[in-house]
Image 1 (cartoon, rainbow, N blue to C red):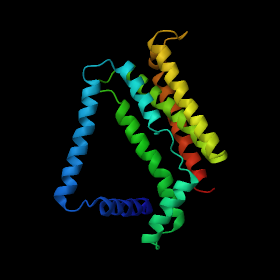
Image 2 (image 1 turned 30 degrees about the vertical axis):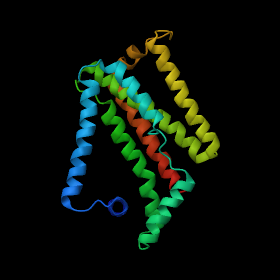
Image 3 (image 1 turned 60 degrees about the vertical axis):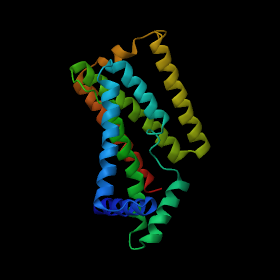
Image 4 (image 1 turned 45 degrees about the vertical axis):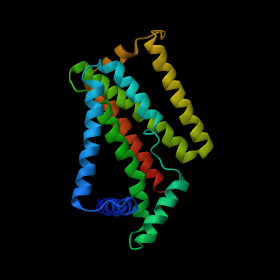
Length: 215
C-alpha cells in the first residue's frame, strides 16, 4: 500500500509541475471549483428527474467516455512507467506498474458509483443502482479479458461494439420496443443476491488486473 501512496504523490507532483499549480491557495481554489462542478452536475441531473431513466443515460455516458476500459494498454503503461522511473529511479518498476494498473479501476469505480448513486434512497433505487453498477463491472471484465489476451485492435473493436449495443438497447428501451421492461428487471431480485453478484464481478475485475501485473 505504501508504494501506491508514494507513486500517487510523485504523479501528483509531476502534474503540479506540468500545469504550474503551486501554493495552498491555488490548490485549494482548484479543489473547491472541481468539487462544486461535480456536486452541481449531480444535483442538476438528479434533483428533479426520475432516477431510473436518467441513470441509464448516465451509465451510457460513463461507458462511452471509457470508464469500463480499465486495463491499460502495454504501450501507454510502458510510457507512464518510463516517466516515473526517469524522475525517481529508486522506485521498483513492478510497484510502478501495479500503481498504474490499479489506479484506473479505483478512479473508474469512484466516478461510476458517484455518477449513478441516487439522491433519494429506496429499496427499488438501491437494487437499480447496484444492478446498473454490476452491468458496468461485467463490461469492465469483458474488456479486460480482451485487453490481456487479445490484440489492441480486437479489444478496441469489442469495446466499440459494447458501446453501440448498450446504446441500442437503451434506445429500444426508451421507445418500449424491447420484449421486456429493463427498468423493472433492474429493480427486481433479492437484494442480497444482487449484492453477492456485484461482489463477484468486483472481485473478478481485481483478479484480472492482478494477472495483468504479472504478464
